Image 1: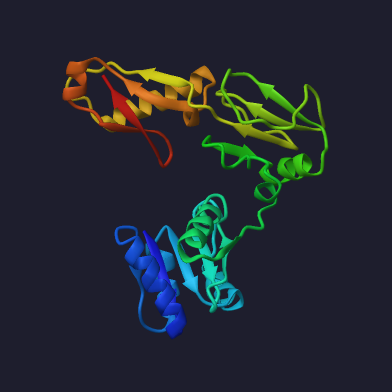
Image 2 (image 1 turned 30 degrees about the horizontal axis):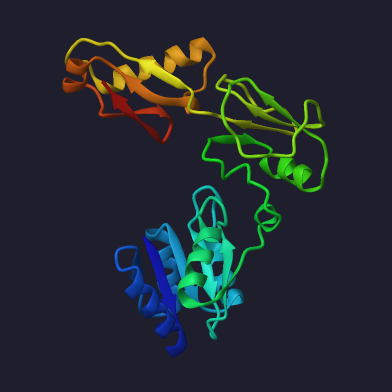
Length: 254
């Protein structure tokens, strides 16, 4: 859901245009602006604030906790000339939202994320779980430093300016490893876990066994794409979706 907040008549007019165009995606927040921003920040995946960027910075600054979890925030100015990606450009989807808002309202999208600005794929936008020094390796790519690609799993990636050796590394692996200094680890969904169990086996027990087996095999739960079992087991006990990694659900297939 996208929360819409405005403070003036002009902002409300643009806000209502957006709400009318995206009725199933948006929710209008009325009342005092500070209260509206706080409520939308807690309840929505993204925000579009028809306010000055400085005002929004002051309002959201105390609410920010983690760029991987914070909602994306876009600001539209009073004249409707610009749609500024302010917070959560990648993880929060604010860069893409700024483009969509700009197209709908006839505003110029403003995206200052460095990788987007130069057309370089962001390491945290590849659709793969990512760990390690994302900022440092991204900066090295932007600065033209030599970055090595260490692909332990065959998996497609967009074009990246990488080499065989370098001071920084992009490592593509499903192994249970900790990123080294100057390294980013990408986790491809390359693993399928086969599960067999007696009917009525508790889901928590099955998932705990899966996690233990992965750990003993030296494999990362973040690379599990599916849990697989025979059809009659799928109709019995156990989860329809399993937590192969903390906070991440994967499908159960039969």
